[in-house]
Length: 227
Ligand code: CA
Image 1 (cartoon, protein in one colour):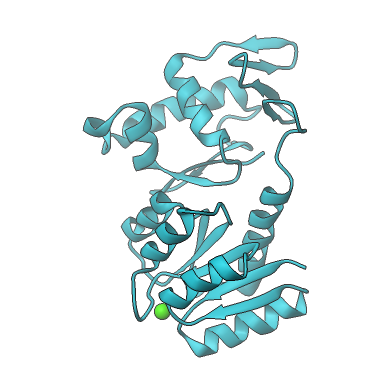
Image 2 (cartoon, protein in one colour):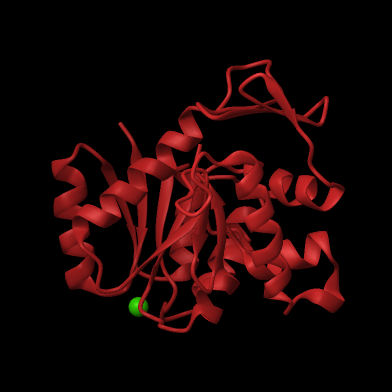
């Protein structure tokens, strides 16, 4: 049974989440504040965490940092905040994904299933240091991408971007993080670089670059690799 830690201080939402999750055979552990969340995340080793960012005792981002100090458990943020800056802070702290309140229960459950499935089943068979999709194969050790019969030539910058995205399949990586890691602190606002390089990667890897299947844009937020 998949155990989900629900960190939320709104009792009505907790009740709704609990009913829906239990109906789908999830085990639910509840925490109404950040301190309880950190304690239960360690004591009950949940398979996933649903985390409200606005908690009575601390910022949800602090909970993410606390949990990430010792666990890779998928964290799905429930955000009532409309600014993308807050969501990006949460992603940069180590959250895996977010849904914006009010959300549909179907959407939340789909994201939760995706997050826990990714954890259970790595995108590649054990022992293969890379990623195989229907369209292309990425061999990390050989730093080689093969599409069909042909080797795809990537520039060092394209390779670096791709590596960051495929490191955690399905995980939304913020624009800021990509810019910081690939180009450095002086370029953290240069989102136009990302647009240019992502377009190049899509031309090289996607069957239909204008409707990408693997390299997905989350507008204003970042990018994700969907295996
Ligand atoms: Ca709240």
